[in-house]
Image 1 (cartoon, rainbow, N blue to C red):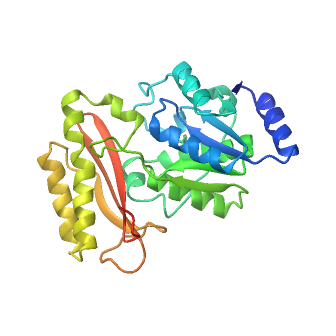
Image 2 (image 1 turned 45 degrees about the vertical axis):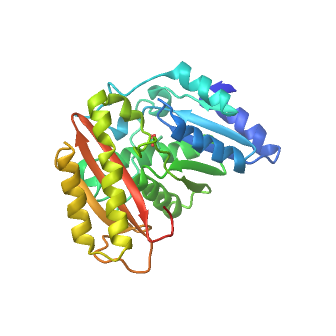
Image 3 (image 1 turned 90 degrees about the vertical axis):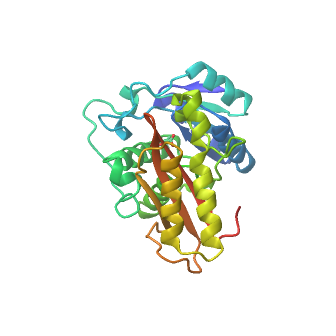
Length: 284
Ligand code: PAF
């Protein structure tokens, strides 16, 4: 696996591949890799000839009181995992390479970025959209792979790629979970053993709400039962537990024919966890 730290190195490599007619996939990450990221790499490998993974802890998507400083950084372990997983290249820009002095452009996606995490993390999706737009321009991939775990992020990136006519296929990959259902996340490392044991209440609450809604039960009741289950398990009052249209993320008060998505964010101790589950599309 080659590592590129400058745009010249990256572009020389990718231009060569593209000139040879090879299909290039990008897996954007912030590092602290786990099996969920490796699923993205696996999926990218299945659909492309060359896979570039990027690692960049993007300061722009963290709020002032968030965990930018303590976000896990494990460059060597990550690089070994990517090489082992069959990545062809690692794109490792520094903050100075990503945001050179004087850079002042921001990408804002309205609509899908509002509400849910957008309401609780002001500026977060501007930071995500800006860095992902830059990664698309830097790497020039044919396709890019993102986890469904960050479902609103995926919707924001899809909207951005559509609106800005970006020539990149944006692919979503189902969430990878621990045996007890907890979605894999780099932030799970923040959980104490005791919090970790209680954290499975989040997927369990969503699974129960999914079952109730798919059985025809009232949406409001299923959501308030899920909120209560989280409180009972020791979570703080959730930021949100909501049913949204799977594509537009518009609120859904009653299940219709269109697939929906159940989404939640809640804090256990100091750690904010998010999760989501498909509803009404035949998926478990
Ligand atoms: O999901 C992530 O790890 C990040 O938000 C992303 C897409 C790499 C942008 O920094």
